[in-house]
Image 1 (tube, rainbow, N blue to C red):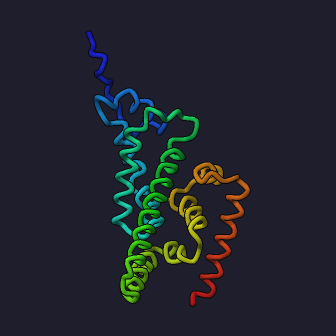
Image 2 (tube, one colour; image 1 turned 90 degrees about the vertical axis):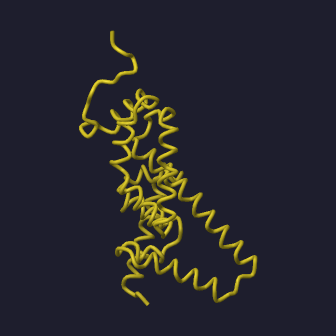
Image 3 (cartoon, rainbow, N blue to C red; image 1 turned 60 degrees about the vertical axis):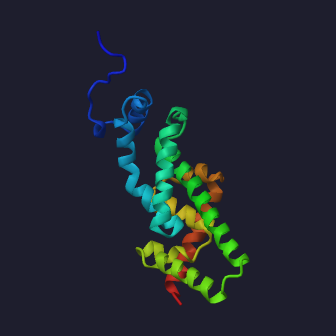
Length: 195
């Protein structure tokens, strides 16, 4: 007699995301093989998206850990209406926004507590240096606003389609494409006139 909790052996690297999600949902209380493969596939891109959005590796690490936990606990609720990748980056996007807001509140609090003006300027300058020392995309992301930066990161780093970006950001498809085009124009102007 076979154990109902026993799973047949398989090579997780040969399965699609959808097959891994289905297996993970069946296995999760007993084993994490399928879940681990899903996270392994997206781990690097996930970190790159977070690092570029947040501007530093420490916060990116924290957000990645939080995203992986949310996926682990939320996988059973994932209905498969969207691709797993879209669902994952939607969670990532929301976690990055949460982290960004926390940092923004922390900075506002420091200002409200009347930190020395020179000291707070140094904090801002050092965070700009972190962003500009990265690859060429990172160097120019500081020249666009937050929404445009999010669109560019999801497009170039996560390599999502415009419809997926629109779904994640709760925007219309045409509005997303228009924001993307304007953001690229701003980047081009910054590249042509770096100072």
